[in-house]
Image 1 (tube, rainbow, N blue to C red):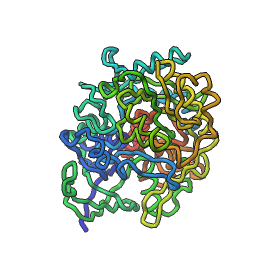
Image 2: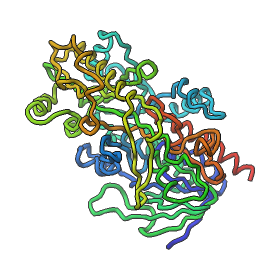
Image 3: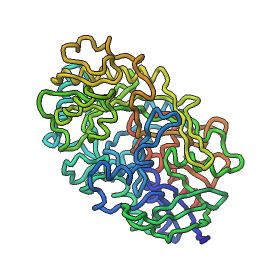
Image 4: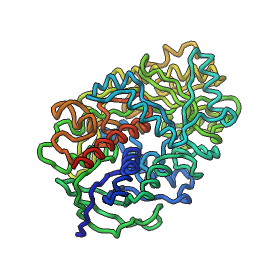
Length: 499
């Protein structure tokens, strides 16, 4: 086993890890050794082919098929240099003030979080897409929302040189999406921070990490690891966990640290989601242009958010209810489909948590509360109204009976779409917004970390990712993760300055 020593080790290279790495450049400049360990590979631009069945196994954990314990929900999270910022659509929203107040985390003030978020809006070139670059699927959403009595809002997007390939979820082939793999991580490496990919952290001990470097598989995407394959023991004074809600929680649990806060793995939330489609009489331009330019926020009033989206045939087919002729009929209409993504704003409840199995792999337990079921039904009814108002001839709604609603029946939406039709395991549910597991709070009795991401009772150990969230955020968590990581970095820099 090879032994190496660093002053600070960051585990994970996503939104949190990339932000931490960039903020710790002053340490590297001062001669400190800062290391980032990322389990996934470092992708090259030519690796992003845009082919659905080619990219999913390379970019996502379990090929995008990571399931909850009962198999009722698919969890999608990226693995690689940049983490999930490689595969999300670039939507960049500041956390709602009402949510931060509800979290009730000591010393966490919304105005401070908003100011930190604004810093990254600038760094990542976040802006509203010009009107002439908005595709028809998005225009139909705006038109339908207005006619149905809703107000659609514009998504700020972190793009530079977008060519409208609509391939955001498969990794941008044009280097346009300004995730941490394009901005913060390269800046950190230029500043002297070391990044090692294909590095799985097996266990975490007091001042030491057990790391396994795996070789690039034959025909696999990405580069070889920066270290030779094998087992490593990495000694360090400070560790920052940024492996995401699932990765951080699982590492803490399998490490078996004595006296670890009892809330590790608790408080998991996910924004359960599914894709709704509606057939129009004519083709709908959706595979050209950015897929996600507008959203409808009903989080505070009704517990859901609607977003414009574009998914490729495989994912679309998986989301459709039923089999046989009805399913085939809707898929044959793929060029004429308008799409809307439904997200329920769930809440942290006991029982929804992350554990590990005997081999140390994460197991996610998640049950759909009645509130979530009602939110999904309300969201489906709102989306159906928007579809029909935009001119759709029929809507596919998995929470309807029957699941295909013809235009002549749009006046019966409230009767046809109901929470009682939601059947876990039969309704295709997925999520990419994975939060909680190492939540912030007041003490080891009610949380895992303090308001600056320090694990209670472990001054050398910090967390800087979405697992910090003590409850759901209601929006895309990307920018909030960066803001919190920025805050965690402040605390670490201050501690190192005084030591």
